[in-house]
Length: 333
Ligand code: PBG
Image 1: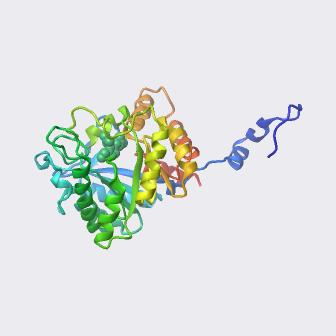
Image 2: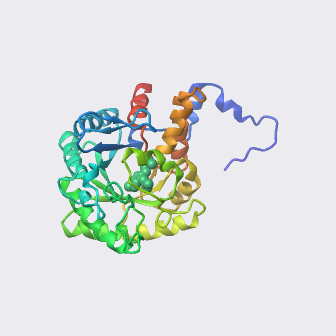
Image 3: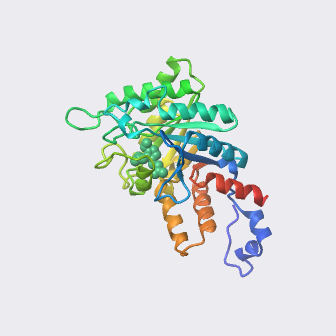
């Protein structure tokens, strides 16, 4: 490698002289196919419901979800990650609506599949929190703790109903130990060897999930600190990574993205599977709120956050701006 000496002719600014030069020497570029759109679909509504803390994002009706999927595909977005929001009275301790073949997420998977087929990678959140009346990602033991192994049985069933509905990729996001292995077994048992697993490998217990809890009408009181990771840790992520790969993860994810770029970089340099990062609701909300106040340039800030995530090592980015950014990238060409 050439190292710049201290001779007076060394001027890195030469490669920044104009937009054409900067474009040529750019080390990282965003492409629509890097982006995955997370989308919420809510049961029993006839109009989309705006999410207050995420201006521009809505809880979709079944119908508007189909339209959002088509729009994403037309913009060149790679995939869509679906989250179901059931009617309140359908929530219970076991998250039964999450394994009902007619539950909102399963219905939405079928809708989107019917609309875009295999032209968009259809992914589904595999977790109980949207469906439990206590809001935890798993089922509870008699003493109120989240019961890891009882939850795994629920996840196995969820994986099967989601696969039956036609999903391409399941995204187990509950951070239960052993979840990837159990989901892989469950899928293979019913002949769904082709359904892949995007493992939420390093998922931190984050304050930035706040707006998402509104988005899914979460019933959670308390926190998820006994299953999601402590923001203080990075070695722990590599341990989670080793376990997920051993259990059969096809792709791995770091979440949130922005505050965890070091984790993302470490994960990306240690694996040979695709690496995703989830730019979460709070990351979205902060940029939108500051832009609304006129404190930052919205488009430039969005582009910079995404470029930073890609530069750190993610080849797939889940972002609520996916369609808008992909449309802009298309227009820029
Ligand atoms: C759990 C899940 C969460 C998010 C995605 N899947 C919430 C949580 O762990 O509390 C957060 C996504 C976001 O904040 O954008 N099913």
